[in-house]
Each structure stands twice: as C-alpha cells, then as structure tokens.
Image 1: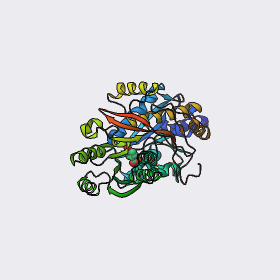
Image 2: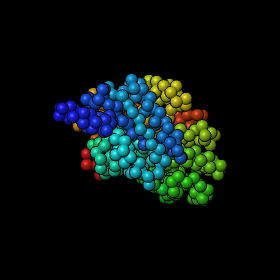
Image 3: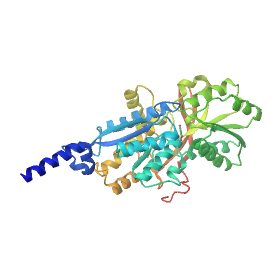
Image 4: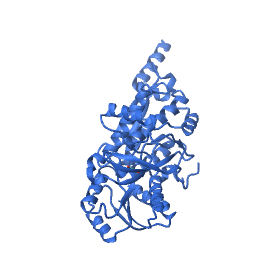
Length: 398
Ligand code: PHB
C-alpha cells in the first residue's frame, strides 16, 4: 500500500513537472526516453536596418548544422528564435528571456554592438555560453572577456585598423570619418585612426548621427565644404545602401574618395547598383578568394537560401562550425564546461574566409582583405593585413 502510494506520487510529481523540467535536473544522457535536445537561443535582428544581416546569420548557422547531420555532439537541436530589433534598450530583457524562461544551452547573437553588450552581461551573470556571430564591440573580447564568451566574426577595431593601414600606405594624411553614433561607429573609427597614424595620417573631422538614422544631407554638405583627402565610414545594412547612393547623388563620388569597413558594400551591392562601383573597403571576407571551402559554401548557401552569401552568412556558418567542433569533443555533454571551452579555444575553423584560429580573448585572428567593387562583387585586391589580432585591451585572459 505505502509503496504504491509513494510510486504513484512520484509519478504525479514528474508528470506535473513535465518532461522538460524533469530533463533539466537530469544529466543530458539520462533524460527521459532519449537525450534531450540542445537548445540554441538565436537572438538576432529580423526586422529593421540590420534585418538582412540577421537572416543570413540564421540561415547559414542552420546550414552548417544541417551539414553536420542536423545534430551537435550526437544530440538533436532545438532553435528558439527572438527578434532583437537592434534595440539596445530591450537587450537585457530579451537575453534574460532566452536564459531564464527558455533555458537555452547557448545564447547566439547578435549583430548590433549595443545589444551584444547586454547579452554579454546576461551571459556573464548567468554563466551561460555565448557565441557572437557579428557584433564587433571591443569589450566582448576586451575588458568584459570571459571563458564562456566567444566571437566568430571580428572586433570593430580590426577592419578599421586595416583600412587605416591601406590609406597610410597611399600617403594620405587628412581624413574625415562618418558613422552612426554608437559603439560600432566609434570603435571602427578608432581602429582606422590607429592604422592611419602609422603613416602620419590624422582624422581631422568626425561626423556622427544617431543609429539608425539615414538623413545624410547635412553631413554630405559638410564633406563637400571640408574636402578631406579621404572619407572613412562605418555603415551597414539598409543604412549603408542609402549612404552610398546619397554620396554619389551629391556628386561626391569621384571627387572625394570614399572608403570604409567592408560592411559598407557587403550584402548591399544589388541595392546600391552603379553608386557602389569602384568603392574600396577592407574586411575579413571578399569575392574571388579562390578557396575550395568558399566555393562549396557559396553553392550550398545559394541552394539553401536562394540568394548569394555575404560576410554575415560566413559568420553564421562559422558559428555552426565552432559549436560542432566544441560539442563533438564532449560528445554533446553541455555540462562538461571546461573541456567544451578548451575544445572551442583550440579549434582551427576551416572558414569560407580562409582558415582562422581564436585569440586567447576568443576573437578571430584572421587576414583582412582589401576589396574593390566590380559589378556585383567585392573583388579581392590584396591582403591588407595578415593574421590581424585585436589588441584585446583590458582582457585578463589575454
Ligand atoms: C555592430 O554593431 O557591431 C555591427 C553592426 C553591423 C555590422 C558590423 C558591426 O555590419
């Protein structure tokens, strides 16, 4: 009698808790029936000026996992998707939803540096694994670096520094910088300044407007009046499309050279058309790299998504590759945190951009390419800086 009651009440408790809750206090291997799925919380912009960037990251991440047989470390995957709208004010609440309500095993995101910093804080406070597939905010792999935080993209400093080096090598001295007034813009310009200073160049004017505004007329009028030797920009997504078109329409193209971090012309060329022709930028990706991995990736992405790959797709794909390598090493046991992190740290990613490794601060050490827009492509011109590592200022792990 007593035994039966005990058994029945245990069953009742389990039933009340539900399989998902039960699974959360049982190790992954012993979850009821079969192994529990690994939950990936995708926090990306699916609306707004960065929507196309978020979509490409999402679809290429899924492609990498599909190529790995739809499993990571032998376990099936469940995706929990959240539109962060590139809205920093909602960043903490959104990230907390994924961690606390949905209990994701990995936070994956995002594009916008301000939102990414909110994710870094939530990941740090909850000791949740975070992989950043775009946002370049320096602190993520700098002052706020942590063992559980990884980035598969770049730091904002990196492409800026590379472009600064290129401008310096051309003997240019007087630059003007234009961007949005937030972390990515500031840090990208700081990187450019540092590279440019190596040749004695100076950024004499900085013109900033609030993100995601695209009313560029006042800025273009000032550029025409100041006539710098070169204009450096950080813009991306929908804003980049409009800036490049407005720059040409204002008659500045061909008068004042326009360069930038490669986001200016990546994933945007179709919409920019003639206005983008001939623009030179630096980035960790280019068209025409002549790498077998790039060719197979581009064909597979085109087949899966129905459109051409760009740098954001590459970063999403490599996020999938990093997860696959880490989870294979621990056979899907997300609880084996130390070996998981150790495996992720030592991986060499065979990326469509070219092979890369991660620095001690968990940011890619990678080549930066000079590219020139020719027709529908950001054509590879040369390697601007080889194996460039972010300085990781303030990171105690580096
Ligand atoms: C960023 O906010 O860090 C950011 C956004 C879009 C890009 C690159 C960086 O294309």
